[in-house]
Amino acid sequence: MNDVPHSVLVHPDQSCLLFVDFVTPLKDDADIDRQSASRRAYLELLQVATKLSVPIFASARLGDMTAASDEALDGYLSRENRLSRSAINPWKDKRLRNWIFDLDRNRLVLAGGYSEGSLMQGALSALQDMYDVYVLFDLSDRRLVSEGSPMAQRMIQHGVVPLTTRQLLLEWAAAANGEDEVSSE
Image (cartoon, rainbow, N blue to C red; front, side):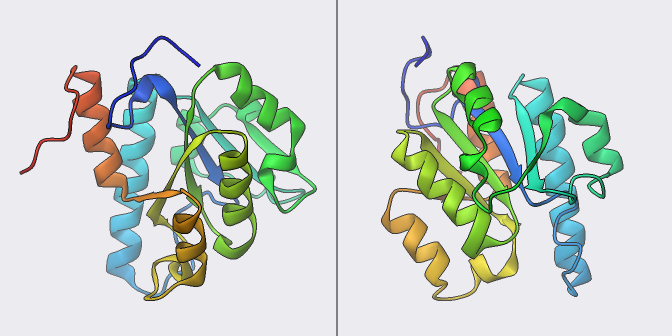
């Protein structure tokens, strides 16, 4: 798809980031410490993605994007990259899919809510279109990270790579610095 050599790292020049049905991370999470950690990870992800020129998109069901205002997101994501859709599966939105196709980047990083619906359907559909798909489990709804989650098992079984935000940021940093493999710490 592009001239960046394939490596074991998630390279920022090959990546695009899609928030699905999601703006403020885990705002319904009763665990304040988890919510605070997620918020910090979310803000750092937006900052680093912008610094590394990783395209950022957000997609929500019709009507949800008007309420999807978040100071952090407002500073990093243009209104044109916030797409309302009618289908549960964000990958069914031709405008979103075509924008991502036109970027010529083969690594799609997803985060968001509704793991058994929009997140999983979008991930599996992107896999069918030959994308490498990564899901940020720490920035997705709690059901995805619960022990024995059938949604997580299904996505992983079909090729989705689970990551945390911290893992992704470390890989982007290493790849941007020309390292070709992940170092152990």
